[in-house]
Image (cartoon, rainbow, N blue to C red):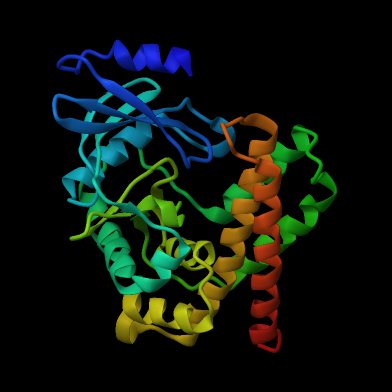
Length: 294
């Protein structure tokens, strides 16, 4: 931490004496709040994670594009491995908040999908969760993961969930819609954390909202109706149910890979893996109960 503090103190953007505080809650990055000349900022430090397909250069580009689209805080400074953004005075969402504010969450994410392509730049990046799962399986085998005996089954499950995905337009998506990536300033919602953003379909984001916030079947239906309106169909509902399983499998395997390659203060990756595997088992039971005969 001392090296990070020294690096933050040496940044050329400050106007005088600054106050630095750790910002807790991240699963893989180191973040701090900085008070300077009457303003507050978030300093986010992190290296590239090839095993997670994370490029910090692409993350900064996306954060700037999201600000240009009016959806995220302003990036005021960046250098390799470090990004400084304006601090949003507001509340970080939890699962209950997402469930209670479903309509605004769905509208914000649809706005992200509809506007971001006009603002992003550079080489296109495709985030396809089923490829990510298959690549995680390769990484886990090479790393000697404790889950190696289970990997073939995980890949088979991903393949089955991929087969029932409906055809949807390609959109620029967030792809990491944990509740904590929504902020409420009392007037509007903001999105943050764009490590995994890239071109995909809307379905992974919609599944991420639902699976990460513990939606039940009624809330799933409300989310899809809000996002798709009259275009909602049984095919979309099945695809969403399958993608919820894929979302939880991907999150569990993200944590399995992190067990091998990451350390973050206060983060228990083994417990996080188990939590997501339990959620996956529940979602898969619901999926199979609803669609095993179709």
